[in-house]
Length: 199
Image 1 (cartoon, helix red, strand yellow):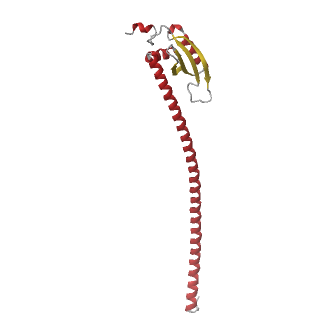
Image 2 (cartoon, rainbow, N blue to C red):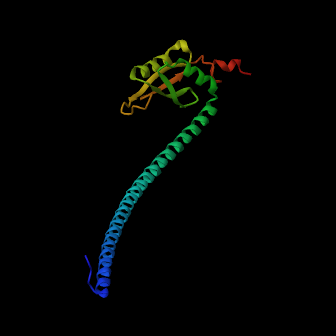
Image 3 (tube, helix red, strand yellow):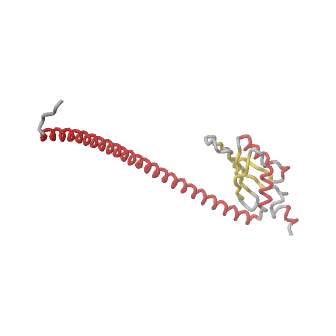
């Protein structure tokens, strides 16, 4: 087939075809850029949304931590105050503290432990807080402390027993408060019969 078109017309057709191809490529590039911009915009929106959520979680966590630290500080201050009071009471009543603790912990049942003690007066009153694994162990602690054969206390009465079973991580959910009176022949108080053996 012989092309008898004038050279100018041929050139115009060639350029028209090239322009069509270029136009198609340009349209494809515009669509591609639009897709890229859409992906970038969606990514930025997701990042901003996620950042806002994380910031809210961080603020909530900070608030919880501040509240927990406040409670922890208050608990520590209370514990320190009780410790200072206990030390003052121990010094004023001249109790051999190491012997007292040793004897008290020895007579407690295996399912209970001594959490705290507070000396009430020089005459020998003491409050003990005992942690126990169950109600039976708490009552057994009182029975053991009241036993005159142990020569720790003359008598020991239960003030209260509270069991909190809602915390599965608490190994000793029961707390028993026991008020006791030192035995007259105890070996850990200078004011008792031990006084005669103390220079």
